[in-house]
Image (tube, rainbow, N blue to C red; front, side):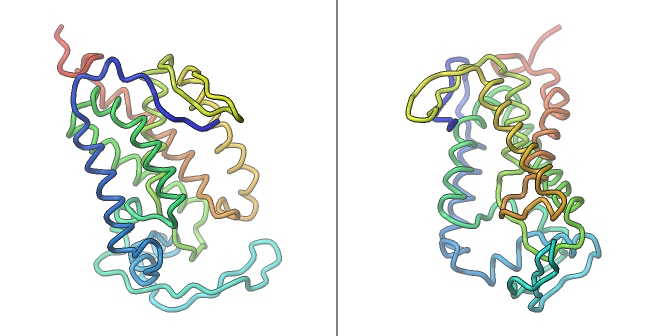
Length: 247
């Protein structure tokens, strides 16, 4: 099930922050990451769990071992991180591993982020997005504390957006591609199935690290739960159509 759009009839404001977030992600990927070819930049600003746990920057090649057999499977040339390694919890959410990675993330953000920005307001939405992204990265670090494999991508923050969306707009119609058919389903179906897949996949890989297949499932799950928990707090005092509510 692949989302293609949603019901925006209740939207009353231009989602400026959402557009800016998408633009920053694209610009970083194109000009700073060189469409994914600039490993030095990527390895300097991505989140490395072991660096976050120890607080120490690792700026040398590290051998990556298979979590089950212990056999070496590759090497990563980690680069020095300017400033504190903890800043990578923020910088990593604006970088991506490839064209398919950024396309999928930006599509989800474009579809679902505007509704939340309309409800929360520009400033609250930005804080909500960044906070969910940081919590998602910390969830990934918690499940991969010994890992030197860099983590990057906006999917943790976007997962928070999805968590907030499913609570605020559970019955919004979402246009999806289901197998070879275009149809519409309620948001709780589309996003509920998405979360179930992330949770099941993450649990299946936890024995060898939640990123065995290259996907940071713990970040997705952590971000989604953060969105569920935080959205009602951030929506306090905001009317359903956007703007302030009155008592």
